[in-house]
Length: 171
Image (cartoon, rainbow, N blue to C red; front, side):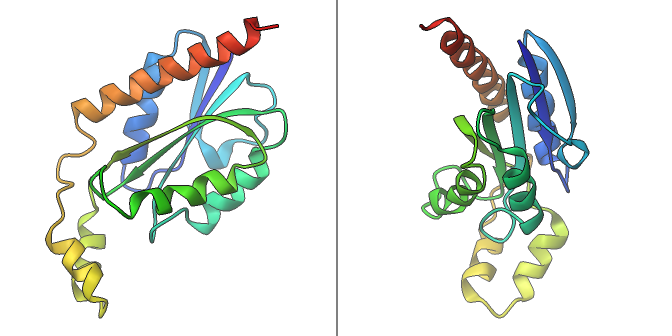
């Protein structure tokens, strides 16, 4: 089996998760920034990772997912965000990634908290939106993704590989 781990990372959070996933794979593999990927059809399984921006995927992420996620491709998504992993708004934020990748066979989706960039937190504190100011004030993302989050990412990678292998062996 041949796997690709491709990611978009502005602050390093998604890159850390990508590296954890890559390290857990026990097959032929490559890792690279997602904007360097031309086509995923040469891979049996592609892990595609992005950060949440403004409560969902950035327009560039949507464009890349729509271009790369073609029928017949098996994809495992991973997403980082500054919100606690049990935040009420998180499922809505993640849905945009699933929708953008809908052209492919999505084997799974992993998300974990990443550290909110200081400059983003500052901007949130001065915006007129009261909810964003409150979110910045109660930010709990310092030190994320932590060892536990990266461990879950490695377990996710192994699970996706096993899922892909079991599909190949089923008649």
